[in-house]
Structures are given as C-alpha cells and as structure tokens.
Length: 160
Image (cartoon, rainbow, N blue to C red; front, side, top):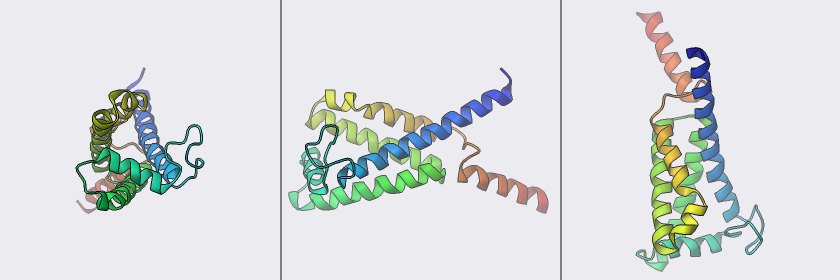
C-alpha cells in the first residue's frame, strides 16, 4: 500500500471517528428531549429532560439536589458544543480531549453508582478511548482545522 493511500485511509478513519463521537453526543441529547420516544419506550434511556435530570442527580450524589437541573443543562450544553466542534473539525484536539475526559468521567460515575456492566455495555470506555486517540492525530482534510493550517501555510509562503 502506498503512503498516499495510507494517509487517505487514516484521514477517513479520523473523520469517521469525529462524526461518530459527535453523533453519539447528539443522539444522547435527542433522547433527553424525547426525540427517540417517551420515557419507558424500549431503547430509550430517558425520553424527557426531567428523567435525565434525575439520572444526572443519581450519578452525582455529592451534588446538592438543588443543583441537579444546572448540572443536567451544563452537561447537555457541553455535549452539544463538543458535537458541533467535532462535526466541523474545529479545535479538534481540544474537543476530542474534552470529549474523552467527559466520557471517562461519565463511565466512571456509571461504574461506581450504577455498576460496571451498564458502563461497559454502553461502550463508554471505548468512546472515551476513541476520543483520546482522536486528540493525538493530525487533522483530516475534511476539517476546519486542516483548512486553517493550509491557509496559514499558504499565507506564510506567499508573504515570505
């Protein structure tokens, strides 16, 4: 296999990983707002934001109950922001690192307060690992980051 083919394969895998992480976050957020169905529907984790808020409180027993809605909204806002950044490939290393940390914390909370099996069954540790790998690779050609690097290089060559 030629180096150029390997590079294209690596870039395609990187773009796919960015998209997969982003869609995973967006799917989780959609579930919180009932877009996958109401609570107790098969395959639906929460089905409503109040149900998600109760879940967030369960995973964070150290937090006063009064802060559960704030925590739920904060996590939701962070997940949407990370998803948008990952889809665009904008600040990919930061977004991937933040995603990995968020997913790892969530997986550990699940393992401690619900049990290891649900965290393992949901592949959250795998998603966190993928995010950390994404943080360590160069931007793919379909990302905003790559376009910024190319533009900066082009400007430097044109000016110099």
